[in-house]
Image (cartoon, rainbow, N blue to C red):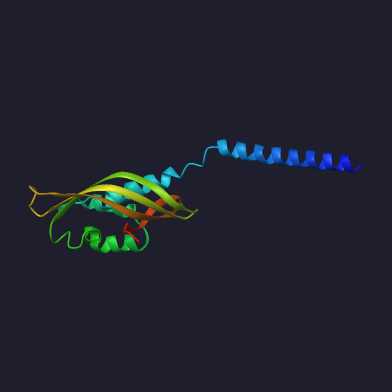
Length: 161
């Protein structure tokens, strides 16, 4: 009788181990959930619009930028325009263009997300078109979902910690 119980216990353990390893094998071959591409695309678009400006831009261009912003950033941009991105941009007649090279969602919830945005930035101050400054930049784009649309709520530099 004892031998039967030992064999039964060993058989039960073997079945449990087989089931556990089977579940692990299935999960190992499962593709990870893809990040929400819509959030990263919205962040890339908003950052590109916000950080691209020139003296004499038409009001329609500023309205398009404003439409992709929300919160304190949106209110600040409504008051100061490009000076939000580059202090004294308007007074210094700065022309800035940004080509977003990549964006990836890092944190995501139903109503907010944090996106890492990489871009190539070109800055020309005043009439100094012969010497544009070009630099790669990385920014944290804090996105908020408003009525089903992802809008840029905050933009901060990525800095070492």
